[in-house]
Amino acid sequence: MNRKLLVVLLSLAFAAILYAQGAAPIKVSGYLIDNACADGAKDLGPRAKGHSVSCALMDNCEQSGYSVVTDDNKRYKLGEQGNGMAADLLKNTKTKKGLKVAVEGDYNGDTISVKKLTEVTEAGS
Image (cartoon, rainbow, N blue to C red; front, side, top):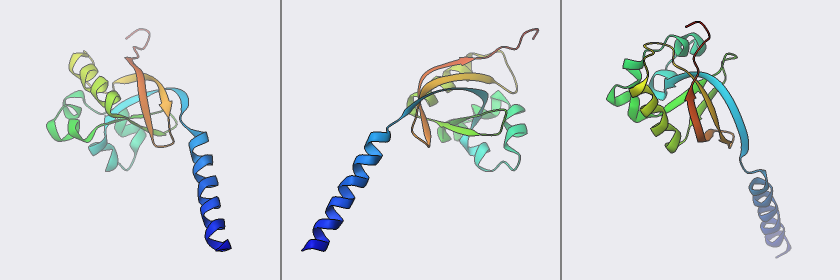
């Protein structure tokens, strides 16, 4: 009986710790790439930087969702709302390769729940 109670209490404590951590606000910028292409990339940074908009809009690529890859090669997957924002941005940009974006949202350790996604234009481009 005592062991069962201990297991239950430890489980509740662990759940409370996980719940308390929650999602943290985050702002990142990097290159937009679809998850289908990102999953198979050996050199993710250069792949994202040179990734074509036309590829990211192919049916299979668009359905896989999107990620942002930062200059230090960290990958952030976008949540459902962010995927929709990314697809809209891809359809309306004049950029052909290496779409750089700024993302604001809440990061839960795996995915960003996007609140804002905008294209970053380099000065002099």
